Figure 1 (cartoon, rainbow, N blue to C red):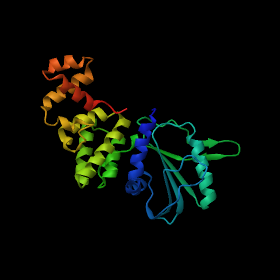
Figure 2: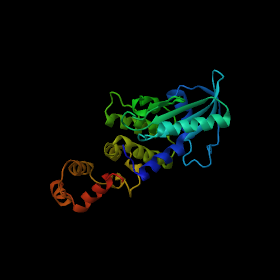
Figure 3: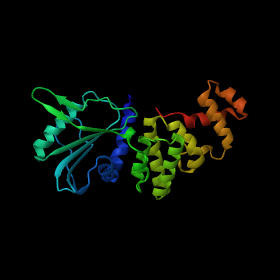
Figure 4: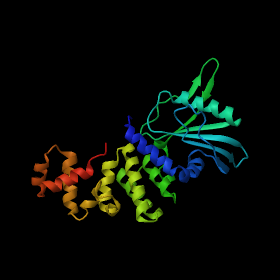
Length: 271
């Protein structure tokens, strides 16, 4: 899955903003690490290195083991990932003189295709990779933290349809968030992450009925809330499922051309 630089920066921004809130749950429920002590470590492992670790902490678990924990969030397959992780491993072990535990959390919708090990004459190395698409979305849905709830959209919906899963996620966000401004922020993050699963169109249709009052009227469908919902849905379906011109859709739906243009603008996927 190829991502534009703008998209990648949006995903990075979300995880940077939310990481401290979600890291305890990720460690416990995804990585299987029960911590009793956790200490932030500086991420300047090497000043000349272009990329820094996404998460770097000194951890003592419930068994008394102390180690350096590194977590990387990866949206797409990177052919050089195993070498990057090996570089991190050597630098971290050299600097901290502690055992190193490394995890790559793959956020893509397909199975990761990256190699996780090196085996040559003088070097054997491997790291753990976990695909979000294989995790039960209830792990995050049942959280009391909205930062975790939005991660549900990246997990496995199992027997749920995308529509039902998204409705549950939206409801849970409303239940766990205090204040309209915060809720608006998490809805925006949810829409961005939904792009990784190609669910943004479904989400926008659900938004029209359930959370339109919270959405930025310049970018989303909230400004359509005063319009007849049946007309909005009808025009939306024609725009998504046909090649009709705006003028023809306006005629079929018995609405103005300007109305069709507004709906079209609301459902256009951000590039």
